[in-house]
Structure formats: structure tokens, C-alpha cells
Image (cartoon, rainbow, N blue to C red; front, top):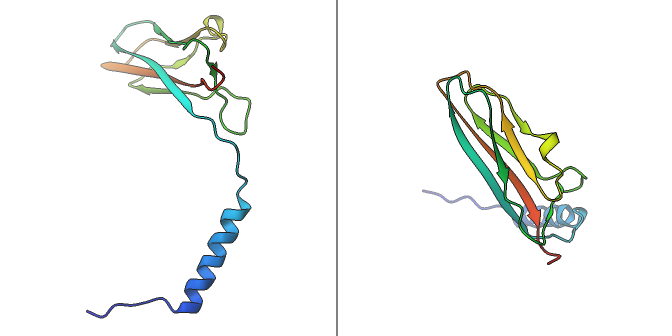
Length: 120
């Protein structure tokens, strides 16, 4: 079996391109985040279910990088509609996720939120 090698000039060019790409990326100060979630399962016909994401003391909800949008996700399985409940969520002290009727044999939901606890 014969090994193939990259000519030195190509390797140097690749290195320069990679260095240029690295230099072009702004180096932002990164903040460690903590992710907490709540979840539940539902059976067919259940009309509504909700859960509250725990809010760690001294932490704030992290924003999705580069935006002012809370860093939160909803993962669900089955046929149901899920959302963060606006009437029970203020993003400062309480966060509640809610799903409507489950129309498949089973449904599940997970509401995840990232928190910035660096200010503690």
C-alpha cells in the first residue's frame, strides 16, 4: 500500500488559510451556562399539562448568543402543541412550559433553559 502525502507548498497554504479563518472569527468572552429543565409524559386524550423549570438562586436566564432572546428550547414527542406559557413566565423568577391535548398514543415534552450564574 502506497501512502500519499501532501506537497509541502499545499500544506503551508492550508495552514495560512486556517490561520486567516481563525483570525477572522471574533473572540467573544464566553460565559459558562447551567442548563435546567422540566419534563413530563402524557397519554392520549390528556387535555393539558405543564411544568415549571427550576430557577437557580442568583442566576439570570442566558440569552442565545448574539441575541436578546432567552436561551430556551422545547423538545416534544407525539402530537401535541407546546410552548412557554406567557401568563406564567416572566423569565426573571419563573418559567412554565405547557402542552395542549395529546392526540397520539403518547406524548412527551421537555422544556430546557440555560442560565448564566457567573454574577453570583
